[in-house]
Image 1 (cartoon, helix red, strand yellow):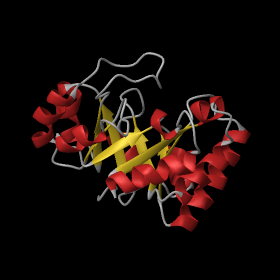
Image 2: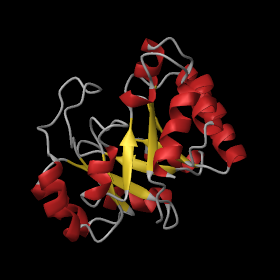
Image 3: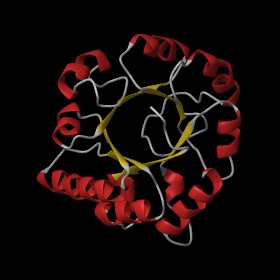
Length: 207
């Protein structure tokens, strides 16, 4: 799997805290030039959340972008999207028969043991983090750091996504340490300016 260097994650709760509708935010991200977009909804998956996802899937398809759905193998199958799993979700080997052999699966890891164990799973990319401190999770895992990212990178054997506290000012560090892609969540929302403008900055930075 070839991952774009810029990997935005649309967290619905964070998006709404910034006063934005998730569908509008997704449109801004895709129109800004993103070629991959993860939909992350950690709250109860209501009918409204399903409708958001349905609209976002149409937007991603129209933009020729890869849609990734966080946690939910069933929804990834319904929307013919990629799937991203965490350490507390169904394991990739169990999700693979449901989504099929052609669906891309990503797996989050937070330490050396999880990272090495990911090599035995049927996944297409591995995420490692948090690389820096993160404010987008209530109970974040311990910070991995750039030094550990650089040390573990040679063992990845698959595309590696750095996640956690990634900003415009530190993304180059993560890429320089070996990351093929950087996942961006909180830094999608600038203190001033628009979401689309910030995405355009990211696309210019990473190509």
